[in-house]
Length: 254
Ligand code: HEC
Ligand code: HEC
Ligand code: HEC
Ligand code: HEC
Ligand code: HEC
Image 1: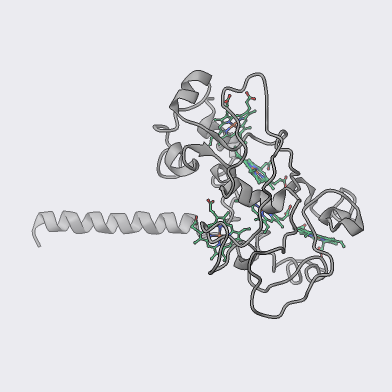
Image 2: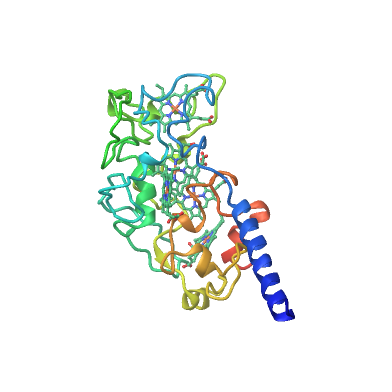
């Protein structure tokens, strides 16, 4: 083997090692996580939970994806989405222009559960198998009206004695005014205008590429800029650790 071939093979080996390491870093699985809606039952929980409040389809993916007839087509989405407007974040110091989450964009997909307007088990295509049909289809809403089909009926701040982890903060409502801004363009000119933001096209994200490559969707900040819906390894589904505010300081200048 001549030295160029050896160098090439070496490069391939290095590539594979890097690829495998990257694979391991994102090895977390949605199975059994809070995004596996089949898992909210024993043995993970001490008491039976699904079936009563939402359908257990015995398939984690089907709550969000379908192999056929998806809407929107990408990423083979299987949930109805709220088509209405959201109350957006606003402040006197904001430089970015806030926009309504794009119809079919990833932020709206997240909000199809998290805004509490659509039941977590309401699908576009229901699986062709038997499952326990829920009589009341529960939404991730804070209201404690038992007939309103709200998870908040039980998940109030006092719902458990002794209290289990409160899931209420996941119920985000249709007001995004109290949430980190999403659904707006974050490019180098915004960074320049603001003065306290890193340039997304050149600043490393810490995930392998730049902020623009790894965290933005069509140059926009969306829920997936900070969260990985499939990977529970870094709680709560974060794309990188926020220890010492590392996530925040990826984009905001120290
Ligand atoms: C009738 C009451 C009731 C309703 C309605 C209800 N839950 Fe629960 N939930 C509970 C109880 C009780 C527990 C704790 C169970 C255990 O630990 O065995 C729990 C646990 C959970 C947990 C685990 C919390 C932890 O500490 O890890 C999640 C997540 C959850 N529920 C989500 C939901 C969602 C989403 C809905 C609506 C679709 C919902 N729940 C509706 C009673 C309820
Ligand atoms: C709670 C909702 C949810 C569940 C459950 C879910 N996904 Fe996803 N999935 C998404 C979202 C949202 C996207 C869009 C990804 C993004 O932009 O962050 C996606 C994208 C994908 C993609 C496109 C590639 C990618 O990673 O972006 C694949 C493949 C995928 N999901 C497979 C699966 C499989 C397989 C399962 C079941 C084991 C599953 N998903 C369960 C929400 C979900
Ligand atoms: C099929 C419904 C559904 C969809 C779609 C969905 N989630 Fe969730 N999500 C849940 C449920 C149920 C929980 C559990 C409630 C809790 O633990 O507070 C949860 C919890 C979370 C948590 C808290 C982490 C934890 O373990 O408690 C985060 C963060 C989160 N979701 C982000 C997202 C993002 C980002 C998206 C879109 C990319 C998304 N979710 C889409 C249902 C959904
Ligand atoms: C700029 C980064 C960023 C964006 C954008 C973002 N989040 Fe988060 N989110 C976080 C961080 C960081 C936490 C953890 C906060 C903590 O632990 O104090 C979190 C927590 C959460 C939680 C758990 C709340 C709780 O306390 O249980 C949910 C649910 C959630 N996010 C959903 C979303 C959804 C849906 C979107 C899009 C509408 C979104 N996030 C956009 C950074 C972000
Ligand atoms: C992916 C990049 C990114 C990450 C990660 C991120 N931010 Fe931001 N954040 C932005 C951008 C861009 C803006 C819009 C700034 C503007 O237009 O003035 C913003 C806006 C804000 C604002 C509102 C500023 C105002 O003027 O009203 C606050 C507060 C904020 N971020 C805090 C945080 C915190 C805390 C974290 C960590 C949990 C975080 N950000 C993570 C990019 C990010």
